[in-house]
Length: 335
Image (cartoon, rainbow, N blue to C red; front, side, top):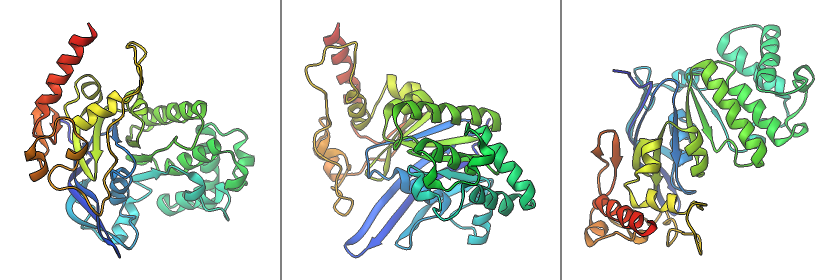
């Protein structure tokens, strides 16, 4: 049986603020296998990015992993020393961020930043590292890499900066690449190019990708398996085909209903009622129950566990069968 290269179990990351404790990640479980793309999807504020920052242990001083384990190469990343973590961060697990202008240092050239990463992790001299950096820029599709390597981040377009950051992330051939909303700040044409580039490089390097996004279309086209998050929790977890064809959590059902369809006449777009709850004032019981059309009294009193309802399909819901009934009714109405 194939073994995962990363296993996240019951991860809980809290932020201790002046206003109270923010339970940004409050019970997340998933596995990542070599060469696959795992999508993490949900509305803004659901804990997607904090999950990725927890894996790399780059939280700010208010954030703390309070429970759970992150097993990578047989080691629990929540327990190893910071020195050991630095050897993994950037080398074995790399990350590209939503806005490269924030992630890239504005006072150093693109080349200097890539060279620094190569020298740090691969123990080669600067001349060799610079040649490797030029090759990487060429590989990610940046024209005239010998010239671009001497330019500063502000001299590049948004798409070029994102490509440069991908080059930096790939400089040490990581086993896992975490891509946090990698195309959000780019126009649609460049988005498609960046996602296609990541697919090509994934195939070449054999690396796994954790793709974090709020865009279900990006998930449909690029992910192999999906974790759906809501209010800090994983509420559904399965392969991408099953998720889109047979969603079982009311929140996933709502997200998919909100996607415009061309095959059905729609007088208005569907939207999930209500708003994402304030993380300082999460509702009791199931966090989704105030917005859920299938909620019962039990939902406001008890918090459901993430259970395997079908082989490989995990759902955090007491009444997931009601989604099944709604799907059958809808299918009958459309016929």
